[in-house]
Length: 73
Image 1 (cartoon, rainbow, N blue to C red):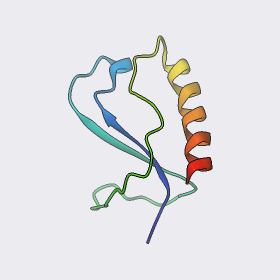
Image 2 (image 1 turned 180 degrees about the horizontal axis):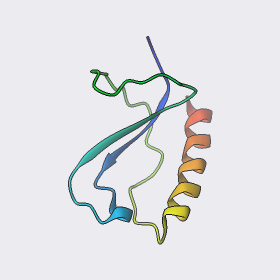
Image 3 (image 1 turned 90 degrees about the horizontal axis):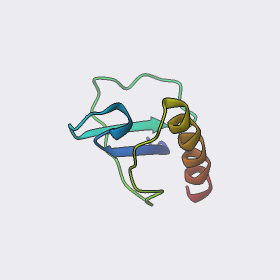
Image 4 (image 1 turned 180 degrees about the vertical axis):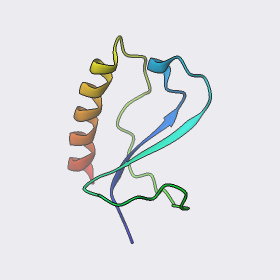
């Protein structure tokens, strides 16, 4: 099964973390894949990772990123 997603690979600087993390937001998906093995195929880079001044600013940028990804996918 193929599922479109927006993925972050980085250290989550807005939250002050420094451990590398991979986070995938599956678009238009309501199931649960925690604990399952998935394969990610990267199509396009949306932007560089950056530190945002607040969680609300990060959320607003993620909404823009999701719109960008939907257009590209």
